[in-house]
Structure formats: structure tokens, C-alpha cells
Length: 232
Image (spheres, helix red, strand yellow):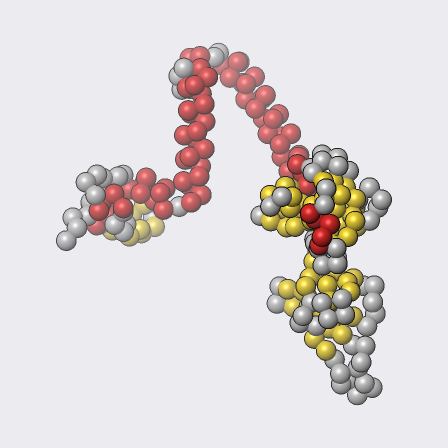
């Protein structure tokens, strides 16, 4: 039977709230860990904050040869330093704000590849193809063959959906997922969405649009012109 440490064995009270301290990983070895560290290790947010502080401390030691020292600056110098850091923070927050504003302003549009009719359907451009958002996914319904009685509605389950990236190429053509673009930096690539951002797949490597330098021109899509991806 494992002999748990006191913090992991007892029920304590902190700040008016009761906490049951479960056995920490350290108690299964030979060492012990303070209960605060125990909870930091179990919380990914607190753990990340602690890691940031540890990394910043390491940078400070490498640069200055010591950690923060209250006597290293005068009071006025500390104030000036804090003002400079605060100004940097304002710049960073403004950049984040602008980025969020641009994302919120991006027009949300979809298209779908029909491998039966071998054609692309664009949301809003065909009155007999209805695009709807259902259960957090986009669906298309074909009403071209609907009878006066409402029969003949067809769910287009075979479609492959792609979203508009919010960008246009040098000719003003909207860029969608699945488009093949000629990029003056990386040759021919196709558009994809990974880790929350759009970018290009080139030679099996994903490159975010933010890292693309140079113009782009849509020359096809992966469904009708897949062979273009291999051309340079």
C-alpha cells in the first residue's frame, strides 16, 4: 500500500472552500511535493503560466547574470521600465484586436464539389441548391426535382464542402479550400485549413498564408485539375 503524503491524504480547507487532495504522482515515488505545486501540475493553465515564468527567468539569467533585483534600478527607472513594457503591451493588444476584427469581418461562404455531376456548386449562386448549417456542419439540399406536393427533395450527402478563405488572388478571384494556386514563392500548391488557419500545401508541407510572400493566382482545384499540383 502506498504511503501518501499528508497533503494527499487529508482533507483541508483553503479560502473557505473544501478541497480533497488526491494522491499526487510524486507520492508514488520517493519524493514529495508541496500541495500548491501538486495542483499546478494538474492544471494546464497554471502549468503553462509557471513554464512561462521559468523560461523568462532563464532568459534573464542568461542576459544579465542574475534574476530580478530590486536594487538594480532606481524607483524612477523602474517606473520608466514599466511604462515601456506597458506600451509594448498596448501595441500587442492592438494587433490582436485588429486581427480579430479582420477575422470577424471575413465573409462566410461555402462551395461543394459534386462527384456525381462532376461540377462545383457555390452557395447562393444556384436557387435550386439550398445550403444550410445543421448540427454544426454544412448541408446542401437539391430541390430541382421537387413536385408541387413537396416530393423529390434530395439530400446531397455525396458532396465535399469547402469554405472561402476570405482572400482573393491577384486577379480578384475568391480563394477557397481545395483551390490550386500558382504562387510566385512556392510554385503550384493547393489551399488547405490546418490548426485554425488557412494556408498552402506544397511538397507535403503546410505553409500558413501569413508566411506566403508574393502573389497568388487560382489556376484550378484539386477535383478537376489535380495534376497541376505536381507542375512547377
